[in-house]
Image (cartoon, rainbow, N blue to C red; front, side, top):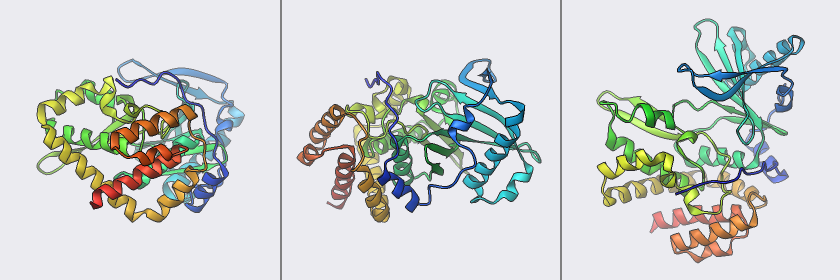
Length: 343
């Protein structure tokens, strides 16, 4: 069973990572920062439509600050969604700003609404944490999902990743008659493999969403990570494998009912092959990212020693034992994926 007992600290963006972000046009000038949003003077708990506490609080700002804050937030949305085209702002308004007080980076979530059709969207403003940024970038490069985010100094802006929260999906949808158990079990195997290969930890059911896409004949599922704070941080191998979190047990049981060990191995090989192709296709960008990562201190030394030992044993690859930090472990892991697929 995988358990994380302590919150990780926030790691500052180093000059090496900053240079990478500038090279990739991820760093932009913002009209408002995370610290600016801390100036709220009141808050109330936010409840969902069933009356349950969401653990978010809706925050309110002094009247003389509110207009400037809301205008700046609309500009950020234009940067995030329309490459800075401010003309989209004329039909938008800020409906609500929420604060998650229990998260590592205590993020703000902004709900923005189109007043023509009442369609709404969200985006997040967080303290910039190097672990999370490496996680976002690795997800963008190595998964089937594209990630949109921007940074300035100590502020991180992220788009909303749509989907049914994993814990809600397990609780409310696993017994649906229309559920395709085999396809969902297959996707969980592939998700588990992606997380392990790119060392994204803490993927229990509250930290991923399930996208459900109806097709003309069937339903497709994709599981997407939404929390990247535990990128290459923990020392135990099991933390990087969603199959070991008890919250995910209903999905494990689904797989046991519908797949054989041979089938599981086939899906794992498919995912490794897909990731190897992504590594090869984006090799120049990944090389730049890993170069920055290998200069950064992203985890306690004890975590580095434990993880490289676990991975050396798991892959039967002693090269891991020579790694000095999480960046070198990641580089070794990705190199191994390409080597094994080419064999």
